[in-house]
Amino acid sequence: MNTTLFSRWLPAVEQTSLVRRTALGVAGLAFVGGAVAGPAVAAQAAPEHAGSPVSQSVMQADKGDKGDKGKSDKRDKGDKRDKDRKGGKPSRDKLVPRGVQGEQSRISLSGEQSENVKAIVKATKKAGLDERAAVIAVGTSLQESKLENLGHLGDRNDHDSQGLFQQRPSSGWGSPEQITDPEYSTTAFLKGLRQVDGWHDLPLTEAAQKVQVSAYPDAYAQWEDQAADLVANTWNNS
Image 1 (tube, rainbow, N blue to C red):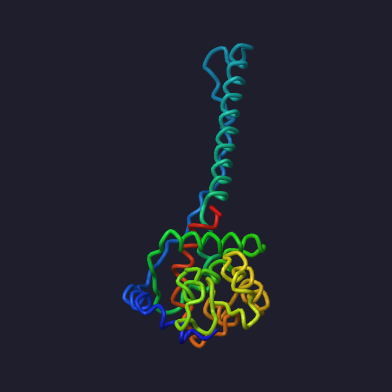
Image 2 (image 1 turned 90 degrees about the horizontal axis):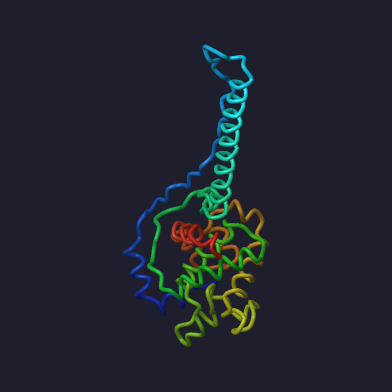
């Protein structure tokens, strides 16, 4: 997809993104793990009446209390791990398995742009693809439209490109109504991504370029860090 004309309609945003370029690192997610040791079973004999039925029953009751406590601790630990898996963020290895490439750009998002991120993530999950596919899709949309669901912009358009991914009706991506629907346009992009051999192991910019066929094939790389952050914060909430 040729973005030469597309770049003309958003000069202020492009200049802003250049100013805001920075290399940002994101700490990996640390998971809580480990097993809880069971209760001690060795009992110290009392100096007197150690063999009496009363003392034995007391020790057995004490062992039972400790055993119940140990089981409760294990359940608590298990519940916490389940909660972490359900509510925690995806690991950095899943989001950016090859690391980011080159200088990174970053923009502040409006409420509408944030909703479009959620729409992309939701459509990715619905398509049965993982977090990495969502990162590629969000990064591609950051480059193509700054996550804005653009309609036809007249003379400022790159031909008839529209929507989150600047897809062209004349190139068979769908009707204007379809490609300006976030779920449809994301699904269409992901369908193209699935056809790229080894897409999951490619750098974002290479995977995106094979789908988009842009005149600026390396431009997608600059958005990988922000795309990973956005997917990390959205994946388990969509």
